[in-house]
Length: 432
Ligand code: NAD
Image (cartoon, rainbow, N blue to C red; front, side, top):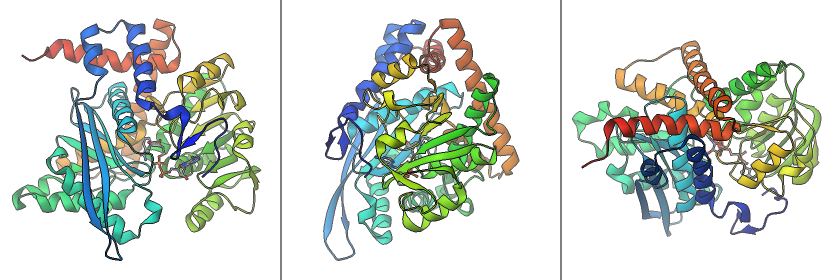
């Protein structure tokens, strides 16, 4: 694992992110205070709706039985079905999943899609298991979740260390548990599926595409261009590598990259060559056309844009002072702590907040869900056009709220999301 400056690793978890849900709540409180959220609705939204913990046994290739712990937290479904990713990682616990589920609610609300917020995962290191073991773990987890997920109730998607293959296993297991007549009506129980199994063209790149659209917009609002701009990226998985590929196509230059295996720098890193290296070796470390650097050197690399696209709580009171960039575009969920945010502001570094910046994934998941419901399949240009339109609608609303309320971008994004939720609560009322 890459070393983390100024943090203590406690069971693989930096100190700064031990209470991720507290950080998530404080961000919410700031937004609520800025817009004067109805206190009753504030009390509802600061809590999750359902928290499901399952323990389930799985037989390993050598015949041993291991017992795993998995979670699904459903924060809100007031705007539509619960929706959010599933991750496989040793740091997955109830605190982390609560925070991630809550961020999903704000994300769907700001970009105006009819979904609520949920998140889940299994606490494990997937690199320790064979493909057959991962398949059995995934299928058994799906069986354990049972009716707690469903195509119009709670719809998982890929996240850290899960992908379209994992979604295909969940789909197959879920359909097997359904009565035969229901099966073909339930393809939309997960999104981020392989194309042939009901996926949506462009879903693989959607989150990175959304990050790139947001950066392009920020550049245009600041009368500058991506051509010749430099960027660094933390995390070279789905979000990081797609964002890097798309920014390179727009004329920007990758100058440093980091993942769980290490960090590298060069005057110009060829993103496609780096990607081939990562697909072979599993990490950016060891890429021959760049020099190895430490975590601190990576964070201190001068560039126009930094894209955190790995885990939470990476930009903290210890690491934020190292950053030497104009813009942080948050591909990851929750990469910046409250102290980190304050330091970025003091240092004049702009932030495109996660709940808008990485919403491209859930937007295209919504498109996949719609296509499955209507037995349709859209072309890539239609997906990209509709994605840009939804995301830029959210960006416009955030900018408007920033000017109206005189707040930073993150708080403005919360104001937009909370206003939408408040309106719906006021219209529907509280039962009974
Ligand atoms: P992924 O598993 O494809 O990639 C994760 C990357 O992070 C890998 O390159 C890994 O090596 C790196 N990483 C892990 N620990 C690290 C560490 N300590 N230091 C540096 N790098 C580290 O995951 P992903 O789907 O790309 O998700 C990345 C982030 O984006 C997560 O915060 C996720 O919640 C968020 N996100 C993902 C999606 C999506 O569609 N996949 C959508 C919205 C938000």
